[in-house]
Image 1 (cartoon, helix red, strand yellow):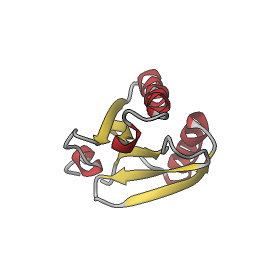
Image 2: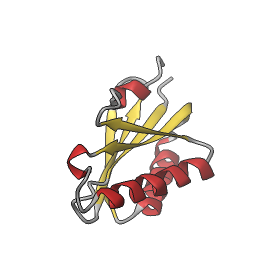
Image 3: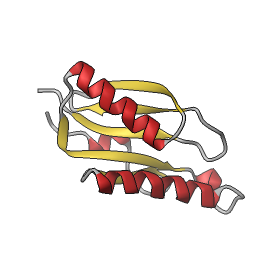
Image 4: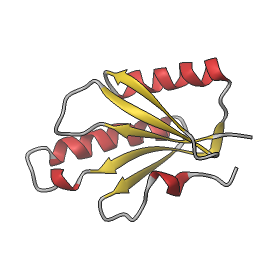
Length: 116
């Protein structure tokens, strides 16, 4: 059975919303949701999409946010950390996982896929 493994937020700290996020499934397929004005808006769209499509979240479902190396030691570094904190809070509140990709983590979205 295909399960939703991650939601990757493309919230570049150098740009303003709206942003998109990518849903990653255990069968390695993806789906993008566009036009998100803020983190709660994105999660509301996620819930609506999951309900409409009868999507099941994996036990290890994870909210992902990239580490933007170009933001490090720049004027937007704090903004990047603030966005990460907002996403992590949502993950914690919903008892989901939170992870980072890119940067020097060695992690990619595929790192969060199950073998489903």
